[in-house]
Length: 186
Image 1 (tube, one colour):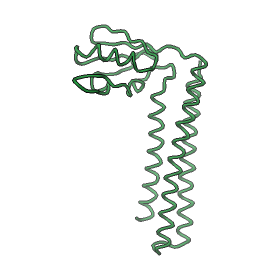
Image 2 (image 1 turned 30 degrees about the vertical axis):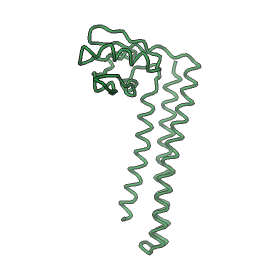
Image 3 (image 1 turned 30 degrees about the horizontal axis):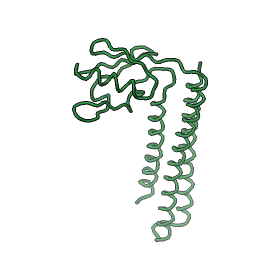
Image 4 (image 1 turned 90 degrees about the vertical axis):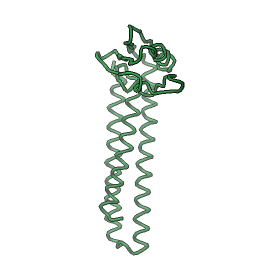
C-alpha cells in the first residue's frame, strides 16, 4: 500500500469514527426536536419489525415538536404505540395520519445523566481513532521490516499519522463540548 493511500485510508476511518459519534449524539434528546431522535424506533408492521422512517415521513416543523406523517392509515396505531413504548419519555398525539410528538423539557438531573452518556460516546470514538492509529503504525512497521520503506520515511509517516490522530481527537472533543453545552442549556 502506498504512503498516500495508507494515510488517506486512516484519515477516512478516523472521519468515520467522528461520523458515528455525531450520529449517536443526534439520537440523544436535548429538549429540542430532532428527526434523528425517532430513528432507533422499530415498529411492528407487516409481520415484522421496520424502522419508523420506512413507514412514515418524520419532520420537525417547530423547535419542540416532531411530526410523523404515516403513509399507511392502518399503521398509525402501531407507530403511535412504538413511540410510546420506546423509552424516550415521549407522549405522541394522533390526528388522522399525522402523529405530533411534543418534546418535553429536560430536568437538571436528566441533563447531567445525558452529559455522562455523551462523555462515554466520545471516549468510544477516541478509542476507535486510537485503534485506527495503531493499525497504521503496525502497517508502517511491517513495511519497514519488509524493506518497502526506509526508516526515515517510516518515522515521517508515523508523525503524520500522529498528527491525523491528534486532529481527530481534537474534533471529537470539540463535538463533545458543543453537545454538552447544548444539553445543559436551560
